[in-house]
Length: 140
Image (cartoon, rainbow, N blue to C red; front, side, top):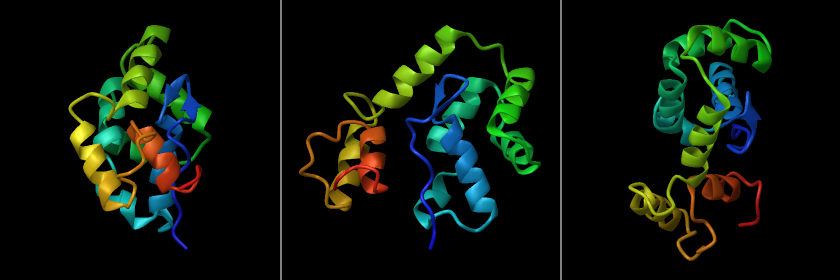
């Protein structure tokens, strides 16, 4: 059975989505990642996060697959990416956790929800909200 990645709400180094990106890289390499996630590897949130951190996705992928803990990979990111501050974490987390709520991604989120039979769910206002339900961590 193919697996869904961990929650987008998990943090590493104070950043939402970073553990999820690492999890997707590892799951995909083992052939265990649910196919719904394949087309977004290195794109969408993964790509935006890498850009924000100042590292390339392919470099992050190579480092992740070389082994080590999430904390060791975070240390590599901090050494090889751009200088990050606590304010950067606030900026990224504010963007990431609210994506789909009253922004340029709202129409896409609504279309995705409708296609998955969740169009009636007015409580799903962000992609993070949607992931929690779609991936089985919250009630459908």
